[in-house]
Length: 322
Ligand SMILES: [Zn+2]
Image 1 (cartoon, protein in one colour):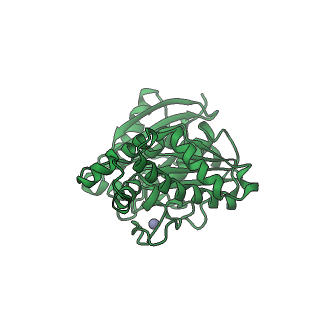
Image 2: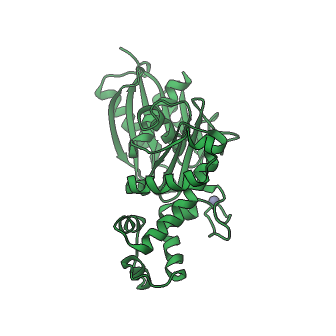
Image 3: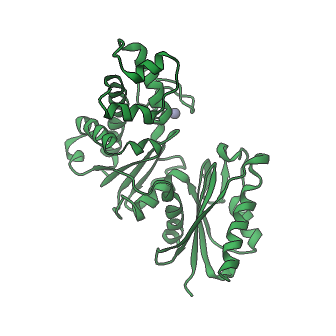
């Protein structure tokens, strides 16, 4: 029997798992809820039980497992297999994730842990819109803005914190970011950044008669999804919000492309559900600012795997490293 790989995507609401063959076929895929009570101390135990149950179900022994790949939020120490400061898991102090798994199973499996956004980029490169290209950038627009950069089939990790696309400087006199600086891309192009921009523009512009602007004036909650839908339907105010936010994103992608000239820049995350309309807008602003020699060869596309990118990318870590 050929060996199996576990691909794991640790998230704040669920732990996603996959079993992948050494040929790269996905054999099984499931998830268990994340129990982040008690400073997240149940998470690895629950994960171990989920792996254990799958092994028993298939009569697999430790020797049948080639290794484990994992994407995690927070700061990853790749050598030690630890994670620190994963706040949506309630992990503040350093967690010995790899050691906890190996000791539970009494196994000497190789375990590769990588930042979750980087892992998603690997997943899209392998099974999604990256189409096996050697140079791919993934930008995820969600609660924050995340990213992963692959150059020459290698994740760019730098000294540990590379690929933090959300913290590229983007806007003069911009809002304060979660990182402490002002004007990061994340404060403009994340779901909350888009809503913040709408709140600012609503009062900076005259009353356009827009339904979205009216809701903001009335103190009602609007979402980035509401804004994109309204813009696509011709709401002048919502169009202005989309133009403002996508111009910052498009320029930032132009800067990334100028440095790495990837074949594809993929846009994922919840905000990207706005689909072709968002893609057209960001591409327009990208083309306006990008160096022509780069713009001709770097293509912006929508990511295709959604929440599955993480488990595929996590499994690919094992194949890439063994
Ligand atoms: Zn920042």
